[in-house]
Structures are given as structure tokens and as C-alpha cells.
Image (cartoon, rainbow, N blue to C red; front, side, top):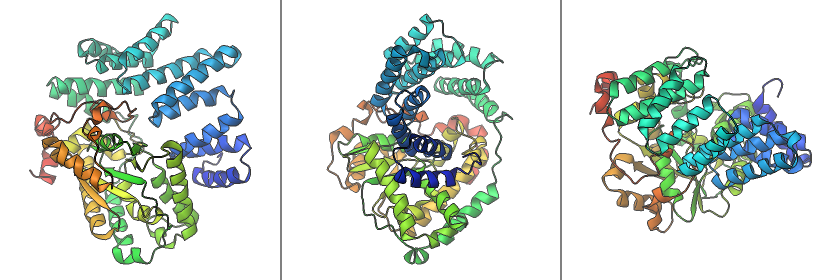
Length: 480
């Protein structure tokens, strides 16, 4: 961990957890290693094991609230919040205002994503009565107004945050994106895209450059490494579980909506965007001392079983007793060849949307620029979308996994036939609740949380035309 070799730390930690499951420090370090890798599901599992051994470790308790929030587990968020507050009440020497404030604001965020604005306001008011102030609290107050569609009150609050120079840069930029969303809905398109462009070009955030040539070369390497002929000679884990369903799409293409529809079925659940399958490719490369994807041809049955078993164990933990469990992590399209080896019983749902709407919507939202450095510029997003399409064409021809094309624009024209076909593809009987997906009280942690709590509509179809003067290069790449 000190050397920041988190892949090796996770590998060693998993082995130690099997050999010494009663050692709490092993679980703490394993949780940290998975967290640094982006394996949030496995990180939370390890953290829960640590807290079993150290139930009064208040920092870990606070992180359990946040971890469950990130995993979209609404009931667990409330339960862990209650346990944390009870621990502080019994042993006040363990707690500080910092922990109370942080965990309460996490709970507010959870309530907002569930559409429980009254509960969110009650928590905010409790903080105000204690004299708690600060930029994050101001941001949550504005977000509560937005959730109530009270834009008249939200706009001045967001402008105040943006204009307060001593506030954290991240909070001010978040306010810019939220204000841009409101202005877009109100038809003030030029100011909206101006706010986004300013935020995206901030030099403090442009830390990791995007190499367009290297990205395209990786697509070429994936296509070469995972041809049908080469995959015939590769190993397989032999794990035939049909529970995993991978929802594969670009950001802002409809993957969250797809997951919401599927999760409305009584035999289905979703675990959000868990990057564990993507990290498997990096772990395999480290273990074999060869870059991915070329190392895939040397993967052993034992290695593939280890990855697959860890993933299925995570599904058992977070979604027990469900026949199908979706994962919609961004970037899955670049490891589908390996997924076919690790989890050969899984299903793939390809989600697509009009590329012009898709590129614009991705640009207009805040994304982790270290993970997705291509999200800063329209032309780079367009390139990534073109490479995404190229890879999907390859997988359709070469990969022996069940696949379904879920087209957002067709869904908005007539939801029921598309949804019926999707549920049939999953091998399940149709349920009318899938048509009423928006009535679910699921905790959604992506920017789409407000859209999936409403019925299917065509508000976002052809939205790109409002910004056509800014999209000429993209229109040339994807002519209508």
C-alpha cells in the first residue's frame, strides 16, 4: 500500500483474508486497496468485515454510510446512519461535528436521489439549527430546490456559490453544471453551454491529457486480440451462472434507464456502475507481466475462475436471490472479450442513442476527468463514440455471448414492445411493473437519477439541434 501498488496489494490482501479472516487489519487494508482501484463493491464488502471486528471504529462507520450510498443501497444508508448516530450518542468522545455533518449530508444526498425532498429538508434544517454552515451544505440546499423543481429559488443560490471565490473549486464547478441544466430546460442554451465550456476548460481539472491516437490503437489491439479464431484457443472459467447482465453503453445513452426498467422486475436487481470487471483486466496484466489485451491469451483457467468467483460472490452479497443482476459500468465495451472468458454465462445489453444527442449530453454533464479525460472536449467525445460503435460491431460478429440491442430512441417512440423484448431476452416472464419502472424507490447514483424517476418521454430527443452551431464537427462525423 505504501508503494501505491494497489493491484498487488489487492491480490495479497485477498489471499490473506482467506488465510486469516479474523485479522481486522487485513480487511481494512483490503478495503483501502479495492477503493483505490475503483472496486467499490469489493471495497465495501471488506469494510463491512472490518466493522464486524471493530464495531466502534467511527471513521469506518462513517465510510459505511458513504459506501452504501455509492452502491445505491437506500435502506442500508439509513440503517448505518442510525448506527453511527447511536454510537456517537453512547460514546460522544468518539464523535465530532465533522463526522455528524458529513454523514448527515450523505443522508441528504440519498434522500434527494430517492425523491424524498421533505426528509432531505428536515436533515438540512437540523444542521442549520446546530449552526452548521459551509459550501457543501449550500449546495445541498440548492439541490433540494432543484429536486422540488423550484428553479426560481435554486438559481440565485447556485450563482452565489459560483461567484464565491474562496469556496472549493469542485463545489463551484458542480454548481456551474447544475445551473447549466436549469438554463437548458428554460431554453437559455448559450449561457448553459458557456457555463459548461468554462467548467470543462478549467486548468486545475485538466490534469490528465487524452491521447486520441493511443485510444484508437487500443481499439485495433482489442479487435486483433479477440478475433473469433483466437478466442477459440483461449481458456474459460467454466462458470455457467446466468445471473450477470452487463449493460454496455456510452455515458448519457440510456444505461441507467435500462437498469431501472430491468430492476423493476421482481427477479432482477442492479448494482450500478461497478468497475470490478475492468479492474480484472488490469490485475491479469499485472499477474502475467504483459499488457492487456495481449495477455488474455495466456490467462489460466484458475485465474479466470478466481476473477469470476469474486464477481459472483459480490452479486451474492449485494443482490442475493435475484435471477438477473445488472452492472452498467462505463468502459465495459473494452473488456467484453475477457468477460466472455471470466463469466461465459452472462448476457450483454447494448444501449445506444442518437450519436448527436449522446455526444452533447455527455459534454453537458460533469464526469471524472481522471477516469474519462476524453469528456472535456466535444470532438474527443465524438471520437470515443465512433470507437465505441466500431467495437460493438466487432463483438456482434465475434463474441459468443447472448446480446440485445436496446435503442433509446425506439423506446421513446413506443416503450412497451421494446421493454417486452428486453425482458424476453433475459429469459424471464414479462411483468407490468417494468412499464412502471419510474415508480420504483431505488437509489440511483448517476446524473440520470432525476430522469429515471419519470415515465419515458421524448424531451431529450433531438436536443442537439438547440446547440447545432457548436456541433458542426460532430455533425460532420455523424451526418443525419
